[in-house]
Length: 350
Image 1 (cartoon, one colour):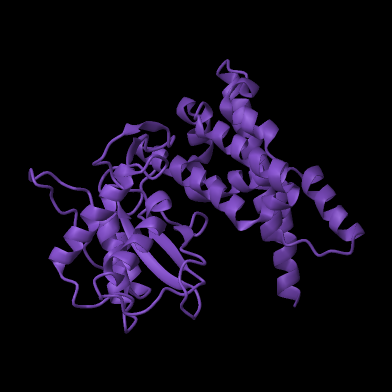
Image 2 (cartoon, rainbow, N blue to C red):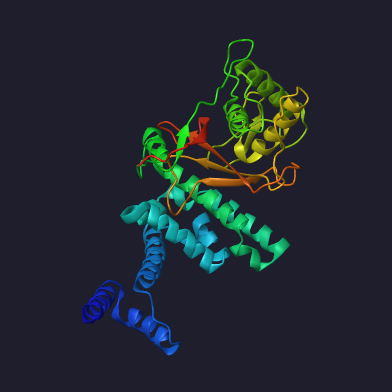
């Protein structure tokens, strides 16, 4: 007990030395006044986030730029403070000692996704009130922007992440092994970019919703018809090229890569009906739907894999939410280049 007390005193002394005695002392005094024992790890994290914020602002202005005139500065002023501090904490955790240099960089200060984040949060609050700020869909929106920032930092050689091969080896360790989503080819021999649809179709077969008699030729035909449905639609399901980081529309392209956040749910519904009409439907999707998790080499504890609820209320089957997993490869780049299905292992690998 005495050893723990000594360790705590030493830790507080270290925090006072690094962040200022008056500052640390005042925060501890607030805890004492409220009868709260301050967690020193949480305290240090909060102090580090505030320091990062101040140091970034100071460094930008030393470069002759008014931080309030940057997109980063506008985000700082516009987002609720707790949400902005959560953004800072996640980036600090991702980038470590390089966080300040990365956030000061012109590409980060004037990154248009900061504007997009502010607009999206404001829109959610306008419709649902401040309570939505702690709801999962809003938090996932924040994570999506941060994932894009991490990828852009890689393209600027600011940080290094594991290779696809290493990340896939890690996933084997947690009970997932990677299959192969086929791109298939069109009549001209060009890639048809069907890897997302084919990966989802294979998962439906693997999990026993569609017949195991479905062969590669059946998958090729079904994926082609699924894409034709999207191309013929007049709306957001049309395949479109998009900027890898901003998400801005780059125009309709019938051969564009399908996107899991746009096309996964409609593709699953299409396959269920397509094979129902052919007598190859085994059982219905549960009404609870599917939790689709899309892994990549950029995933971390602070920025977990992208997750979407799809096909909720579509099926008439019983049971809980299905868990479907995909892997989105990026190679040596930062934007997704290919989807593969991740199948659950029957035995976990130690």
